[in-house]
Image (cartoon, rainbow over the protein chains, first blue to last red):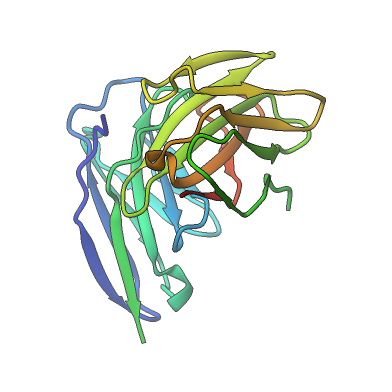
Length: 109
Length: 115
């Protein structure tokens, strides 16, 4: 089962930063934190992942707390096209990802 | 950008019929997966495949399901005798290496409707 807890939904104003939290208090030492998103019923899209250091790519930043029990995905300047369900997943391999219910992010004009 | 291609995008079939869902993974990828998502529900893992055999499967993946890589490019999911509850989006994914340092690429899915 999913080992993460995320808020069901969040709103964000267009152009503002969207900060999506995730709790993973039972994460083990070799498990990475992955973020994917799903726009409508399209295939999940990879965003970012990390182990313990903060990560940044062209899409987003990932902030992982020092104890690794929680993380935050940051979309620095949300656009309407970022409206999607965002999934936080912890895994030590990709043989089977457990997708939870995710956070429905609504970006509003 | 490379992408995973799935066909058809939508398939309607009668209950009891066999269906084959097709996927073309990214060409240099080695690990292949099927997931499904029943409308309004979570994305669920079905099966993983590597080196021409199943690596792992979920309890959903019963004897009605099978996977195959018939040639160097296609990866298929067969449902032998479809049931109404098989109606879902089916997503194929591929991965070049099964390590934490790589991202999985998902296809856009096949919507299967069993009537």
